[in-house]
Length: 170
Image 1 (cartoon, rainbow, N blue to C red):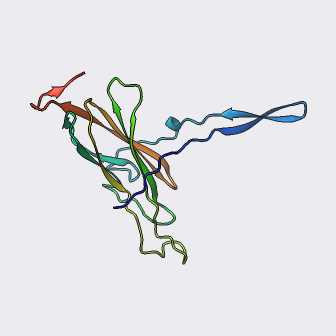
Image 2: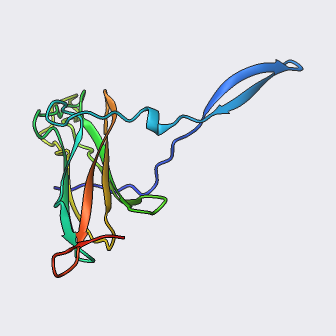
Image 3: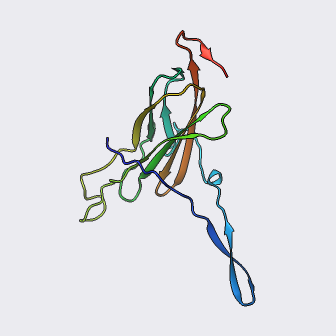
C-alpha cells in the first residue's frame, strides 16, 4: 500500500459580511470549529468510522504497530463519486495538553482516468499501518474524511506496561 503524507493542512476562516459603515462593506471573521463537524458512531453499524486496531497494552518505549481502516464491518464504497479522501492519526498522552500528530495519509486513486469516472484499474484502499512508541499511556485518535459524508472520528485507550509486565501509571 502506497500513501502520500501531507505535512500542512489549515482550516481557513470564513469571512461573513456585516453592517456597512460609510458605504463600505465590512467583513467579520467567523471561525468554524472542527469539533462541531466531527461525527462519531459504532463502527460495526456505520461504514465511515475509522477502526483503530492496536494493542490495549504496550511495553514502555518499544515500537508497536497500529492499523486504521474504514469500513471494516460494512464496506465503504471506493468510487470516483464516493470515497475516503484521507486518514489522520494522533496520540494524546495522559496529562499533556495537546496530542501528537502521528501521520496523515491521502488516498488519491479512486478509479478516475482520462476516459472518465470509474474507468481506471487503479484504486487505493482506505487503510493504513504505522508504528510509534511512547512512554506514557494515552489515547490513539483517528479522523477520516469521506468526500460525501464529511469528517468522522474514533479513539482507543492505550495503557503502558513496564518490561516486567506491570501496568505503568503516571
